[in-house]
Length: 568
Ligand code: DPX
Ligand code: MG
Image (cartoon, rainbow, N blue to C red; front, top):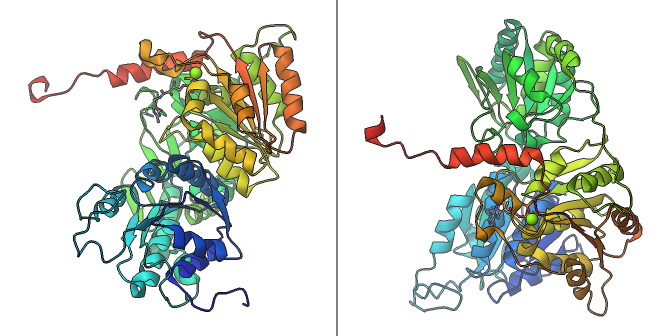
């Protein structure tokens, strides 16, 4: 290729591998330890550099990009940058996303010469960052010599792609431009590990047998389904079985809501569409990529009390059996071929199915409420929408919505970092510029990562942000109240316009009434040259009843007294 540099370097090697695995945008914050590396990445014709305001946001933007693209990269400088980026890397770990965290590192001569360097802890041991990274990635490598770069870069990227977890690659500042061999075939990095044929066959046959002995099977879908790339195969299994299909809150949208077998979101007392009635009636629960944590089980009150059959990303476990090296998509497809049709739970659910909710439409002059915001968001969702819902009451407001076929839903429920939705939606929209990205975010969360709106302005990304201003940390109020749950109010609409400076096109709008929100949403839809933030002011005590119920149970789980030897 004529555009390729004559001298091929470690930086070029990384750039080529990133392009080969489908990365088209890399999220960066510069610093003197990574500048040569950034030059090399910039020089690659298939990579576009996206600058971020800080490394926390940069890592979260990459986290969002990985949701859209399947993998992502975040490039930062040593320690001052990387340690902030560890937060988004933790999110990628918790949320099962292959985010490649790349950090510049000290010159390879400095450690042996006992030099004290800037941006470090002030001693000459520079291994601490690599050691920290090992805990929050599936594979962490530091390149000691250019000759080792191909092996270590390939190892880290392969581990990330196969395990759907982040990896860490540290490239010393004097190695990014060092001569390196060219990469070999990319299949050596990306080729998936196939299921063990015998284990797969045995798992499907045993699962079909197990289900034959049950009368009331239900499928429960969890967030790892999409990470395993097995949504189509799940649909096949569901249709072959004919049974009810519920989703966990973090898996909303992973099974089509318009499908006749969809029975809602299961999370105990705050379930939607009476999903809990049918899940509790089941005598077999096929859990596909599920995560049972204190939030999804509503403070451990909604742990199903029947034996679970758990189909995971790379293994299957259920009462009396375990099969390793079975890929989820292959297992679901194989079981779909072996299983017997049994729609008992669907017949029962159709008798339990709640009537469609009557939603009151507010008059234009009515003060804005949470319910009215949610009703209007429902009205703008189309097959082309992606809805991001932030930690806070936005979770409950978003989960209560009905997704039209094709609409996507993004939530970060395992990590639960307030502020995630702003950079993550930005990263996501860089991959999907023609989808309409809509964010529901609280005032407290917005304050954590507000700067990243300025990148939406810079890159002219038309995201619609509904900022729900209830003057504080309401979800925390429901879990445990105190003066720390109050925050300083901002003029959010004005702030967003400040990001415009002389050349930006963000819109900041304020909606105090139902009518003002209608007008603002219309303006947002027509505005294509940058983001539109609509500050929706609601009363401080206006929150969903699901949040209150859930908050009470989570608070009791948090408050369990320690169990010591004397309490046994
Ligand atoms: C905290 C949370 O305003 O939403 O709807 O008012 O609750 P609501 P806001 O965005 O407030 C969010 C706030 C403070 N959680 O209620 S959920 C603790 C927390 C966290 N992440 C980080 N720090 C603290 N989840 C980074
Ligand atoms: Mg709030």
